[in-house]
Image 1 (spheres, rainbow, N blue to C red):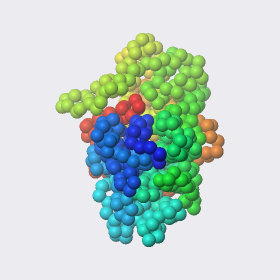
Image 2: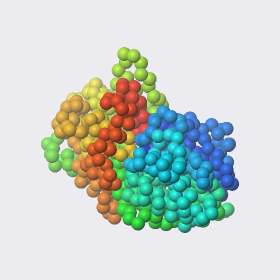
Image 3: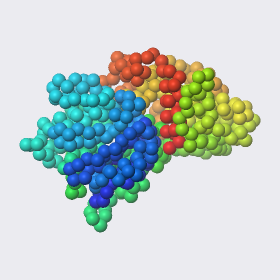
Image 4: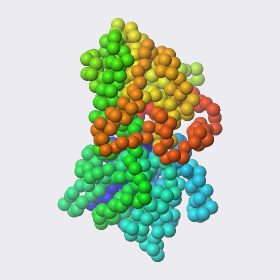
Length: 508
């Protein structure tokens, strides 16, 4: 999962892009980068870490220009530690081109072969984003007239990209001497919105992963970029758009609404916050249906993204809602030291129970989802240690049984706690007294209730149905092998790094 921004403005954009990365930081904490365009010259700075760690005053001063793109990265393909895979990526042939990408290509290996053998282009990293950049560069060259571009040639190039690339991709790119290009995959799996700002010097345009970036940066929401559509804004501020796919349909990733998107965002006409309230209502109705004689005393959310669902559950059930955990937002990554049970220590450093809310009570803990179950197990134990008589656990999402291959880094199938286990077995694994999962149909209804025009979603991590139609068991085996570096099981240190990333992301 990544966050992307692209802007064409009337004044320098370095501060604006940096502020936008801060707003989208929840979408990626591994690396950050900004590329600006000043006349025909790109200025680029990127590196590993949070945006405020990557950029210093000297870096910002060097990022001159009134147009640019920015990116925050959560690794889903390639290496999580190689700073060379921070984005944006750059090529200078046949045009100066920088690109940032949110998503994941599912035919990267095939494209790498085509680029090397047929297109005579070199890819220097393992990142599918660099592959996508080179595919776009090749198609721009193929559609240019005497190495000159216009809006039609650019849109024709995007059409060719759609024909070659499979998977999920929301893209921002700057073409030196021309302007900002943004486009979205034909299934609309990853979000992309566009907004405008009228100034005394003329209109400005901003493209971003989420509408919250438009709100906080002073841009007025125009619309979502449609699946398969491309938007091109030239350096004079002229706005062009075109549907570049012969066949497209909106199938947004439902996990955006469950967890990844900020609650104050609206994606494809759907309020993330309202969706999470709806999820709480549907889950409360299920609880009343299957457990009418429950003995729950209090509903407690696990900070932060589950709070709307937990609040609405409590309201629907007529049970008190209480904040039972306090999150320390200033804890960084813990280090793996010999002989220490670091996973337990890490959770307890970042979450602390308010004992008075647990003592002698039957508590219902509500989380947005349960992925591996390790953190859930530790939180259940924290509730018991704080004095809870019984600890029940509710997940606002259905059981996560399958990997997500479209840009969300999830564990392998055997690491997902719900794979091959019943609800009762999962309940025992996390040491809860009872577990309640959201039904998938109810989750879909909770999201669709905010925008009935959307009839289908990508729910692959819940139902194993991959919307692109090209995901096989062999493909998943290769992805999982690559993810673990060919190792069957991750080391304790790798486990710890993943937990730290999840815990820090959920606090943003």
